[in-house]
Length: 165
Length: 385
Image 1 (spheres, each protein chain N blue to C red):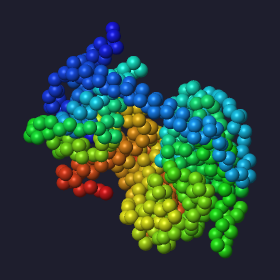
Image 2: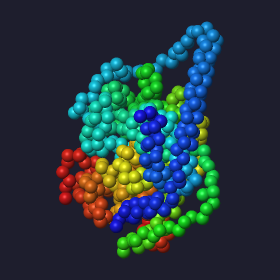
Image 3: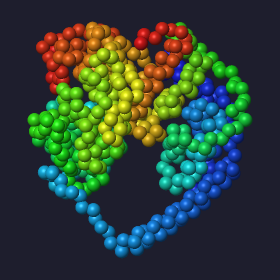
Image 4: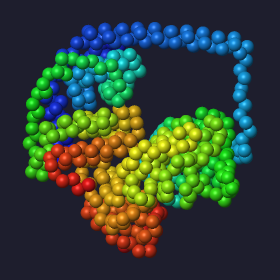
């Protein structure tokens, strides 16, 4: 199989999951489309040396988001957001649902949001997340701690529960 | 359902909620091919410009390289750098100091092309530092750099607290047996530079004075200050000059190197806060803002950290579990000096300014005093009480 055919097979097979990852990392459709497009073109350029294509695309997406990239604006930016689905919360997590958490996730600094998405959604190890972010596992853990702390404080503030800090 | 589960569910639902756009594979392949053509063209142009530049420089200089000889360095007594040796499988790196930990006990570190399990042995003359791609090891006063090719001896130091890697990892700084500052430029194969302490007007520095290294920025500016003193200096490696810092706040008790040319001073009248500011090239400290002082002491397995913010102490898990405030008697003017040692995953030892040691439960936050011990305990020492 030619290299370009291999690349095309990979992209066609992984398109949905890569797009969802880009969307969660970027927080908007337009930005997700821009970074995924850039990441896939970069992966095309380096396809011959790529051992793990999915990790490579993940690295490119995260790199594009954290270091800046040409942003495209599409009509999707102006579209009204669809209603968020509610999570069935347990008793102890009464107001912790998608309505509360997703906007707060989007408000996190890009690197902290990326750490949470990679660790929680992609289920990557600290080493896997460090590879994607281009940093050490120690930095991943530190960013993870800061992100969770910020998220918890924000949730407490939004739900009106007193923060013990 | 835990916080993490709720977050995972939220992310999955949010990802599913957005319709996935149609993949236009021919367009993508076309953009890839065009980008590849541009990359090839750019590489050729770069090569051409580089060749032209080299030819021009060679013509201007008469095709002669003039090597710039460095000025003689004072007392450079360093080990032979050709004495490299492979790191044996059992001769493994150790735990890293808190806050800069890159490997915990049992983690795998790649050294000399070999996967090496780490071993925690901090506290008995062994330390390991890792920052910006540079790994240093101290054992019995000998400072070494660990590289993929093996171990490179750098020098010796009686003061492990002085060992510092610069932002960006270009410079390594420590103090030698004569309390001189030793500066090693890792981009330069020459011997390290030994620098005598600064001579202050009316009070010369010398072997008796202590030089404490606060931090080194990426431009090679070393921030130092004698202990128990209101003085601070910077040593500029590129210009080889000492510059006394001016404009410092009155009655500061602790200086923290934050990043770049930014320092933070703990001032007694505002406990729990740092006065953050930047140092100009001529050594003037310019205050910028007051920030809450926060310091983290990581558990060896990085499952949690003791975080000090203001005058309160918390145990913060690295997952989304709840934080626990440690029930430590508060003092009005808590200093930023605090010794913390993790005894186990569930217990942490605290000592504040020599006032005795508290054993605190990570789960409940309750603390009780342990008489007759001081921190740090050696890793093998049994825990009394």
